[in-house]
Amino acid sequence: MAVLTQIDSASETLDSLNLLGTYRIIEQGLLNAFVHGPAKNVFVSVSTDSAGKSEILISDDGPGTDLDFVDSGVGTAVIDSWVGILNGKKTVDTVPGHGYRLVVNFPA
Image 1 (cartoon, rainbow, N blue to C red):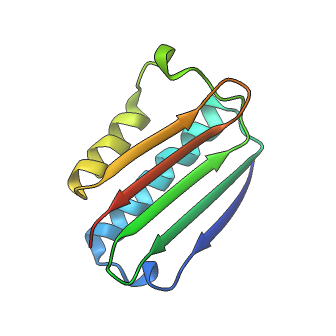
Image 2: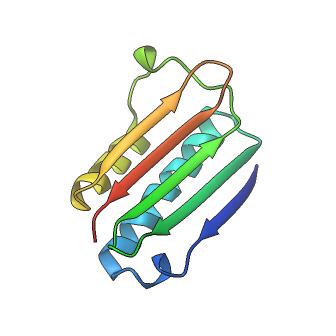
């Protein structure tokens, strides 16, 4: 699986809790893309705007799925836990045949 990453300089200066949460969310997102995809290519982006709002984007070219029939596993539980810790919001976009896209936004 090839992984392309893009992290802006503002995101590199997040505090330790936000950095750890970002790491754990990306870690689980990559594991999910590898195990459940299986994806061949994954794009990971982390950006933080001037107001301190951060966004994590993980998208892959896996087969996608119908979210109505997905059972949440340990990886999703870890992601959801970190989204809560960071007071963030998670959005998932996927349909059969069109990959998977996870977006997590959280404040400074």
